[in-house]
Amino acid sequence: MKKISILFVCLGNICRSPIAEGVFRKKAEAANLNNSIEIDSAGTAAWHAGNPPDTRMIEAAKERGYDITNLRARQVNTNDFSKFDYILAMDDENLMDLEDVSPEGTAANLKLFLDYANGAKEREVPDPYFGGADGFFHVIELVESASDGLIKEILSENQS
Ligand code: 4NP
Image (cartoon, rainbow, N blue to C red; front, side, top):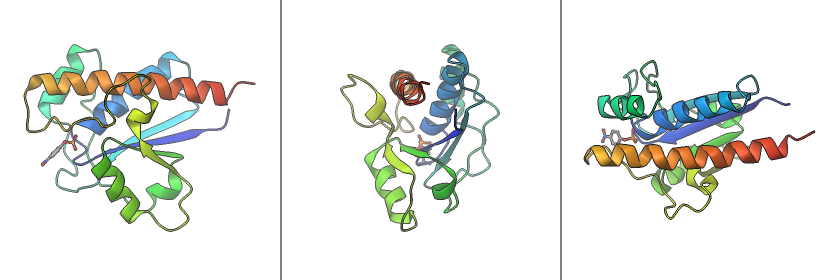
């Protein structure tokens, strides 16, 4: 199977996209895809570059069985558009910001991550930063659902 690279993108790269990376990595491993997939995450803003994920997301992730403590935030850069096959935004604003900075002729598949969440009522992963603990668990549920959908698509596209 050809190597597939996926970049998850939110605003700060400390809440939504790190948990998307952590959840997707665990599910990819469970589907035996870890040798075929490269996963990373980034933020459209540089405010938190170099920082670990938000402690509230680290704690919520731990409760759900995901370890994201080793991740460090970084900002999206122009090389990402040629490096990654999929660039998956958490919300419409992230998607618009990505489209604004994407070099002409970018081949990457630029989409909302929840496009892969079958049956989800929401289109966007809501920003939990200014809300309570529930918001963090809600984000985890949404990214779990979208990760399942994306893994299904990758497996069906790579059937021999
Ligand atoms: P994220 O959440 O985009 O999911 O990482 C946010 C993190 C930080 C801020 C906003 C959203 N902030 O305003 O610093």
